[in-house]
Length: 266
Image (cartoon, rainbow, N blue to C red):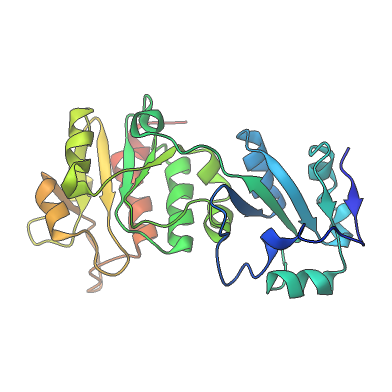
């Protein structure tokens, strides 16, 4: 049973929770999950909790069932003002959990038997990253692949925005698309489909393939020119009212539905 510690907290025990709005954890073997649903999703995925930081009002409230699942994991519940001073922001969701980062998957482990995947080239915004994972989970995309410049799916904001989908959809880091990534996917039977604002791009609603690898680019510049040259299929989402683009997470949801979701049912 978890020990609830409200005072005389051991020195250094709360260090992982300091200044969460300013930086990510320096220790790459840990991350912070925020909110009860996200933490529960991580537990269901088999991840290991190390400690819990909880507002006192939630210890016997909305976090009670979660705490009952933690075994001997320490639960820290200092006064709310101390939590705000520690984390650097108002803890609206009331609960944070320090968790062990799982071993990174290889490309083949992430793909497994997947019939589709999303490839995120340098998508760095944590909110976009989490929204893309949420759409991938909801619409049946089998895996997410990230280039070296893409953000961290386990970052606090990404995991929260994803509603825990980062723990459900397997993902892996790959090299740059133009430096072997495209070939690696083609060799595994995937058809590369790049979302691109090119005049030559075909409407996405008229395209179909059995194993799509859906490429999405950076929020500012989109996919790199050398990446586009590696992709045989350039697709575009038809738009109205003079709009020429969508936010990358919105574009991802449309693409996932068109190329994956509407061709399969839960």
